[in-house]
Length: 181
Image 1 (cartoon, rainbow, N blue to C red):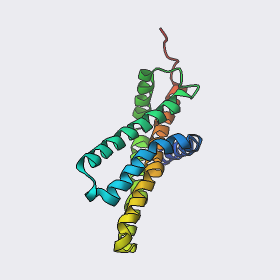
Image 2: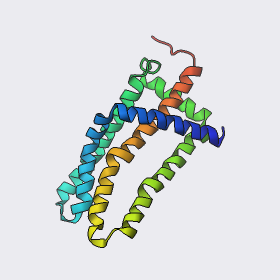
Image 3: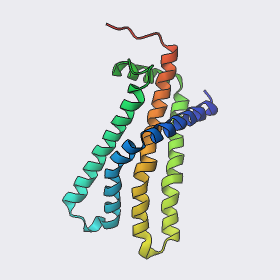
Image 4: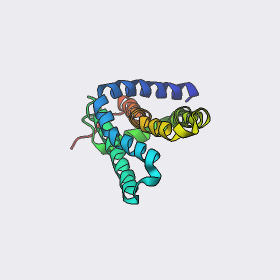
């Protein structure tokens, strides 16, 4: 495998992810509303929030992200005609085989994810710290952190599901049909 094949996998997953995100926009943004509100409140009023609200908000955010990822996977794998008939164990097996056949391509996805993190998280945070007046910094950071939930974080889930989906589909294309009992 080459770097170009890993970049192609990332590109194809991102293209599929963009279509998926737009097709299921209201679902993705709706589930992402919980962490959006929680993150805004935590950054904006974090020191003033009671501990039960801060802990409960973090727990609710975690649960909502698990729910979002579950829904993305259900839609990504359950609606594809090739994948819909496969049991979860068969999907996991094919995903493992896809990773085993293309380990460098798979690892490169995390390099791309790291690069995206730097560009979409680290650099904007540094820009706010550098260019926004101290009196407005907390509000701007609250908005920035809240905006990342339905966009960057949600799209990352969709993109990673797209990578898994493509690896499974490529294995499905080369694998013998599953044995049904």
